[in-house]
Image (cartoon, rainbow, N blue to C red; front, side, top):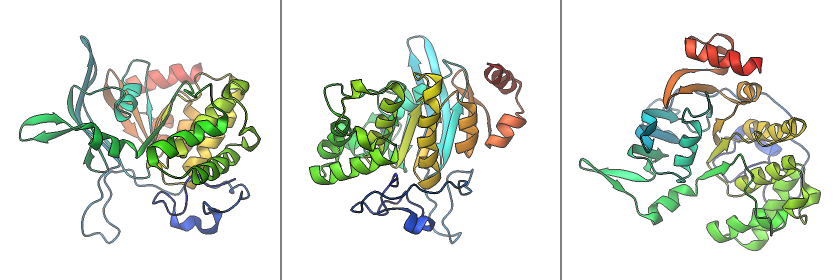
Length: 310
């Protein structure tokens, strides 16, 4: 099973060493399961020497507002995610969680505030006191760093599994077809679908299609991976395989992950930070152990009691 990110990428932990196969290598043995390395909870992180410039967060929202008609979904939202962090957003439906992911994929436009990726303006910047939209060219340069796996798989039904994974790296990243095919086959091995490269997506189960969608997102070598309720459209018996793939990505790479899920055990296993949302605002923020064992806020306690009872 190949690594999710090549060794030349900054997302791979140096300590992984020979456990990570180079891209021109053949299939490798599955990576051993191990607990995730400790991560800093606070963003941004200081430089290793304790001096010099401070690394910007991978994701930063400053005073972000999003409205749909008269309904304000996000109300002056501020939060950041440090590089390599795995942050899960929980909360009731309609609390703004998925809207955040859609803003980060530029599928929606914010009404106020700023979004930054690695310190770079993403959709707007300030010129004096004016909020000015960035050109599509500047947006697209930053957007290449962000990948997303959706609730619905959004695969191209007229293409094979391999073609679905190869399409974007060739046409968006500009890599050669040969490189893209080699990488796609590595990723299909990783997600347990190495024998399905030539199948049509319509011939796959829902769980298999979602694993193809994960491989397609990883093929773009994202620095940030957004996961939007990736198991909500699956039958219960198919959920474990998909979550297993994502656990391995979390444990073997330093890809920054922002997750929206109602799978509380998954959130507890892979996250190093959990944010409880309600009515477009952060109600509570804590490490997973605190959030799921001893939440402070009454609203969080009510939500978790209802979700875990169900």
